[in-house]
Length: 310
Image 1 (cartoon, rainbow, N blue to C red):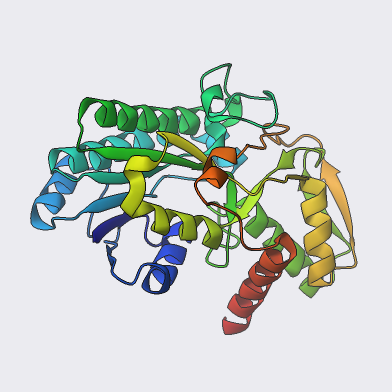
Image 2: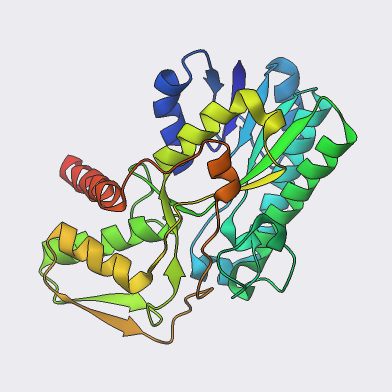
């Protein structure tokens, strides 16, 4: 099977390229860079598919950022992701690609809704305002995949909704870093600088479910040959959430940071809880493989190695 992977330089894409030779040795992964394939250019994407026939697509690329970036640039997060999703999904469909995995996001779910969140809860209530644009782009992409699959017997375009992800290839310290990488960066830097306190945005009481990205990639790669048997939308989570304060405490202890934590209550913290149920995925053989302490230790080590390498 020949696969187009978008977002190949991101955290998930990097993990997939690293694991594919072992998990799916018969899979040829094509991961063009942004310069080689500008995903917001529908004509460029169409031309790429014409020149590079593939059997499947994993669309993991997106404009991403933290809470403040979403608040500051809602137009960009909505429009760039809409254009990207349209170009890739419709480009694949028009090129005759039969299999596509679209990466959704837990922000697709309503704000402060029942816990745990089920796949049928999408659009059941208002979204979280701080990342509404990004969420709407993901919901639209998922609906487009649904419409294409329902309209064509030989199309299997499915949406996987992971909980928040973290991994060793995250962009530590950048505006695109995920929460765990951001915490690791702040805590390790504070430890190395001898700082006596680290700031936490908001109360720290917001709860987040995180999954080690390697576990998601494992499930994605083994699911590619059987996409026709997957539900149209499928949650893939860890099954347990922790408060932001608890993540800071865990990472602080594991990194050997002995200082304190203080809160900036003027900062936004987003949805207070969005733990998902992954019972449908578990019925299909999915299970998170990496215990949280082991995964956090790997990420801390990866950042320390990055610092040491300069």
